[in-house]
Structures are given as structure tokens and as C-alpha cells.
Image (cartoon, helix red, strand yellow):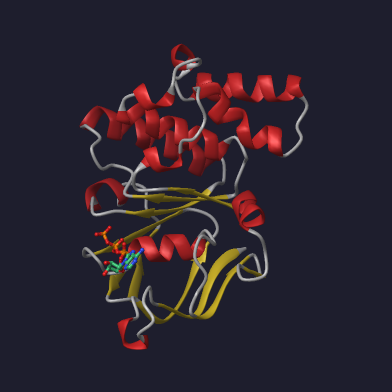
Length: 221
Ligand SMILES: Nc1ncnc2c1ncn2[C@@H]1O[C@H](COP(=O)(O)OP(=O)(O)OP(=O)(O)O)[C@@H](O)[C@H]1O
């Protein structure tokens, strides 16, 4: 079980000389924590989006458990890989916290009593019980982030990509997030964390990938 980048190139523009990722080959194990580090603009978020199937490679293939992201739907990728954007606000759509949590379950046809149970557990696990009926826009940044994480995890993906999860979190909130991630890792959920915050990610990372202009050098820790 792994996520494989097989000869991946990606460019946002039409000019082939302006590739952000140029013939990248790497395998990311489906368990443990992989940290993806690199300077601004080196292509970290682009790699995250390629892994989550949000964008498709210009050349090469991204294989998730052997399935090519070009050949499966975004929904199918989403059942395997959850992706938390750099800015959590960009992925909150529902008018209340509980509807944000139940949205995907309803689409996937779960019974109402099961949805109720799952939503209650998520609210409790992520300390959002008091926010249940609130308009998500008014939540604090930390609460928004917990809501997004809870909404992703309620669909039970096997792998999680977190893009700069510690931006704007204070030390207490960073520790709270680390505790959540540690529990997920112990439950066997694999993770890729994109970050500038080396001290945060290296705390639990099994493997570090450093990106330099779309080339990777990786080492185990
Ligand atoms: N939607 C887009 N359209 C055009 N160019 C883009 C787009 N998104 C990213 N880029 C460019 O692609 C390059 C890589 O961006 P990416 O966001 O993947 O880097 P990053 O390593 O995550 O950067 P940061 O650490 O600043 O978040 C940058 O030069 C960026 O300007």
C-alpha cells in the first residue's frame, strides 16, 4: 500500500519550460508520517494536490494503491485520501457545524440514525459540541481547522494530507493538533504533512522529503 509518483511533471501554464514539478519519482508509504519540506514555491502544495487527485499530472502517473488518479473520480480518491487545504476556510461550505460534518455522509447514503451517531462522536472528539449549531464562518481559526479535520476524518480515509497545518496556531493549539495526529497515526492512518515548521513535523515524522525545485531528496528519521 503506497502512493507512487511515477515520472510526474506538472506545470500550471502552457509553456513546457515552466514546469513546477519535473519528472519526479517517489513512493510515499501509506503508514506513518512523511514530512514534506521545501522552500516557498518549490512545489509542495502542488504535490499535495496531485496526491489528492485535485489536479492531474501533465506527464506521468500518480498511483494510489495501484489506482491511477487519472482514471478514478475525485470522490473515489477522497475515500482513500483526505486533504486539508492550507486555508481551512476554503473547504467549509455548510451553514452549520453539524451540517458540515454530515454533508458527505448524507451524500453517501448513510441512515439518519447512523449519521447522528457519527456526527456526535466527531463533535465530541474534536471539542466542537458547543459549536454544533453555529455558522462555521464565526468559528476561531483553530475551531475551523478542527471542523475541517473532523469533516475529512468522518469519511474514514486511510491517508491524510495536511498542507501547512500549523500556520497561525499558537503553541497550545499546535500541541492539541499534535495530540490528534498522534492518535490518528496510532490508529494506522498514514499522513503527509507539508510544512515550513520543521520542529513540528519532525516530532513524529518517520520520513522527511526535502523538495528543491521539484526534485526530492528523502531520508528516514
Ligand atoms: N493556480 C496556480 N496558477 C499558476 N501558478 C501557480 C498556481 N499555484 C501555484 N503556482 C505556482 O507554482 C509554484 C509552486 O507552488 P506551490 O504552491 O506548489 O509551492 P509551495 O512549495 O507549496 O509554496 P509555499 O511554501 O509558498 O506554500 C509557484 O511558483 C507558484 O507560484
